[in-house]
Length: 178
Image (cartoon, rainbow, N blue to C red; front, top):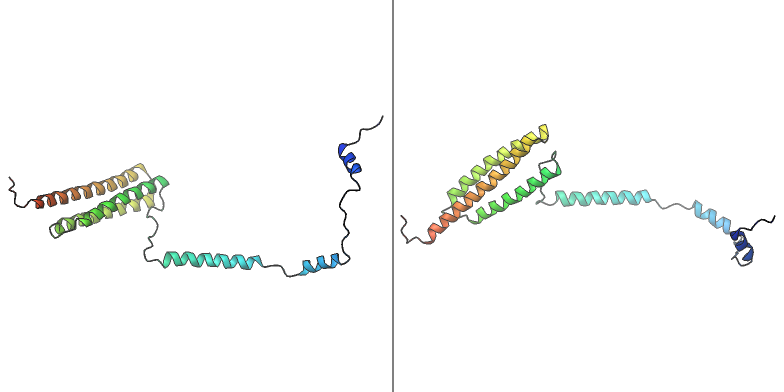
């Protein structure tokens, strides 16, 4: 019985004289050995220069910039807690900016008292943060943190309301109030 030829073998037999065959030059082996013996490019040197440049740029941008703010105080908190803190912090800063805009000789005492009260609330918040770092996250600490943040925002809103009421009273000084 005759064996069936493999189609690949048939293909090689059919095209055996059509292959590109080129002989190498006589000194090919010498040139190859010379290239192997040549000094290789030192990638470690280039990489170390790149790392040093990256460190220098990082140090320049963080330490050279006087407006650089240190990272959030919540180093040991979850992402959700850090996100909540940052949202409330932005709201508090906006309210403080609004109060600063209302600064006038008539409102000077009210604003000074409000800022004094805010310092006390900030000190309480720092204690909560220290408790968070020592004991980790618990429902009580998170509730205390959120409560403090909400208290600060509502306090600032009440101060703003009071300042606006004072401004409205001063708009019509000739009117008599009962």
